[in-house]
Length: 281
Image (cartoon, rainbow, N blue to C red; front, side):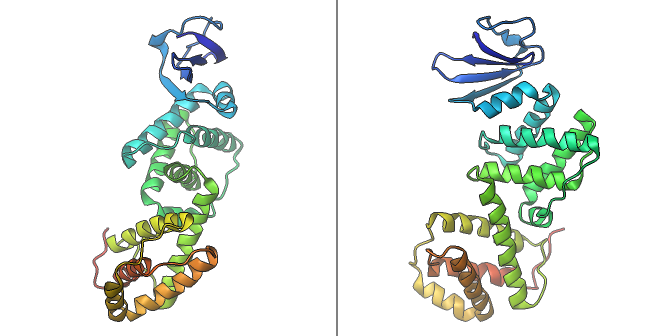
């Protein structure tokens, strides 16, 4: 594999036999090398295979300290292992870039407050846990101690990479889920136990519910009898679901929520407002 462009001592751009651009990184990979030289494969530590690596990514790799790129890669690999699925390639730009700025801010004693920290901790518990692990890795490998707010930011980048790569969508989803939970609390005039399995299932349901709303791909209304029975059996939960429906249709004016979606909402609401369930601690 021949070097097409040297990004820095630790990174090179090359072309494979299929015409794909590949970014290779490794400590001292390009030391005393020039364009056209063969890459020493024994020094390759990370390979980024992309059809068209963005100029932003190339610049990031060329300018960022190599040890920070290694840590970002470790955080991403850990996230994929915990979530048991690959993440959108764009996370190598967004999370790595965020890490660099977070380290710079820490050195100057400047920290950003994460206004969505509560929502992230409660609605994206797994991803927040990965974010907390990231802080430990950063402290161990880079010697920088970052606040809990940064764990929330890392979690958002991971959630973003799980979904469609659109950070605006990720932030809006968190806000809408928060609003829906507030509607449930208001309707029943009580707090919800966030440690129950039913609560976690409700939040998971809302995430996919909002994805269907975005795509206008709601569950088809094909279970009329069941819906009629459920709404009569749980009138308070149904009243709450009606409020959520009104809220959702104000957020997504072109959408009309089906009875099938309402059925699932009523069932989940009835479960999370059932005081008999034992909390998971």
